[in-house]
Image 1 (tube, helix red, strand yellow):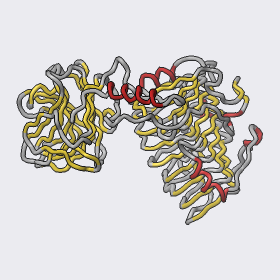
Image 2 (cartoon, rainbow, N blue to C red):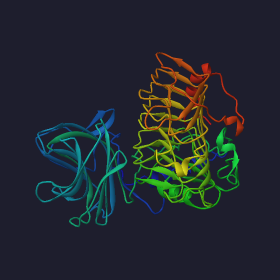
Image 3 (cartoon, rainbow, N blue to C red):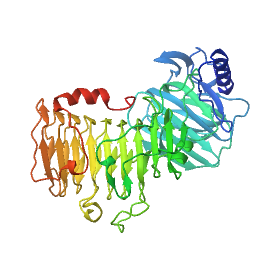
Image 4 (cartoon, rainbow, N blue to C red):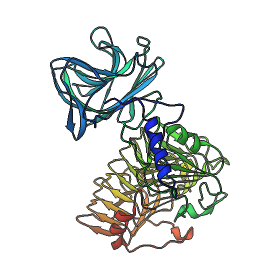
Length: 531
């Protein structure tokens, strides 16, 4: 059954909890007064009351959970919902599982501004394996934009219509945008254009950006926002006018759960502790983090998707020494990163005293953690990286010696490089680069690659099924590396190393774990929910 708003339900639940519990405080994610959930249906009540159908064969079925199924492929089938004439500005989102297409030029779709069964905008998954943003104004579908899409079982489709701008998202990543003035308002809908599909978790709001699917009211993710902690390694060093890495210490603490709140908080000046609650979908691209920030996820399932963090000034080849306004003193901990459209985390332009710790990073576009352009005094620790190829880059170009020589001092420790083929990390120019007590498993290209006269100390790591665990001749100009006290098991190769490297102990003290214990300790302790 269609639910037109969850605000009153959530408010009632909050009141009930408050009345029943005098000794505890419970926070609920109630929509703000400036944003409304216009319509929602997860079909768990077993019916489709409120949906008007035209063509096809529609019914509520069990498809994992209950879903709305259009099972025919011989009709132009649509179902629409919404009060009266509908709305102008709207974002229509649904989970969609295509089942079958009756020929070419077919699609399954979500609809926005549906005025009649043949007048609407649509975002559809096509029989050609693409996503199509289009419209109908009384005749056959008209394609406005197309994009490729990765194969999946269920897809999250979201079609935004705000003013004359249409934006299409697949799995929280924007794939198409156009402007069109044909249709100004209407209801929301679903369609199977000579195709069958299951639809679930339909949600319509009056704000752009990602939204949560409609569910029964639930409490927010469990956990606390721990902004304490001290790094090990280069982030502790007194250098460049900064003694250690303290992030937002001394500043206030704020909690954020929307893209707008998060982007505003990370970019403001002054010390600030930022607690991120839940997965926040941010606009595509990189979002700037200012100095003196601690950004921490609440519990084990909070983070960002759709974009990444940029810690640094804009790239400028003409600057060859640390500027006074370089971004510094930033901590990023206990966050999940997914679906970045560029890097998940980028550190650049002489940024210093950065601690990246206990995060879960996967399924990005470019690097998961890239550090470049003279950045130094960075610790990357206890992260779980997986389901990605270009993992971590230190130094972005063989010709960037003017910015990088004598800098790029980074410690990588207790990270789980989990079947990540390359850049674990790939290093240029930095010295010393200290890679210790990490767990490597089935890195099919190379583990640590040290080149362009970089100096890498690789010690106390556990390599499992890694044919080329350490190399200073991987690609481009050679580097220098020392590999000592590592464990190599299950057909792992041997290090390809030569030359001498500065000892990190001249910069900081550290205790090396027995490498035979590293696999167990890192798999148990890395990633989110472990601080």
